[in-house]
Image (cartoon, rainbow, N blue to C red; front, side):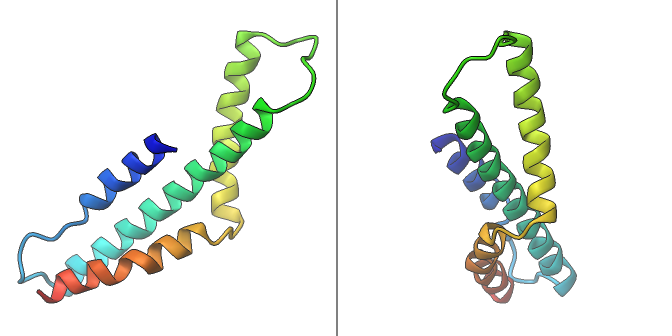
Amino acid sequence: MDNISLKFNSKLQNLNVNNSDVSKLNSDKKLKELKEISNQFESIFINQILKQARKNKIENGLFDSEAISTFNTMIDEKYSDILSKKTNFGISDALFNQFKSQVVNEKKN
């Protein structure tokens, strides 16, 4: 989970505003970026859940191989993207609501 936190923090730091004369258009862009980042974080979180679920399976199958493992990793990533877009887990919304005040407040400074 440390790697996930680092990715999220590095993307969040990219939202910092440099000047106090930021236009509304620029702040809307920052809010849109924050929403995209929070959606990406939710997708990463769901991917971790899928990865752990697959890792904790009880039995080894007849067709287990490195190719199957790679395929499962790729399909889990795709499923996590789809699930985060189609299903509201609330993680993305919670992150967006938590950090949007920082983006809006930086606009006013």
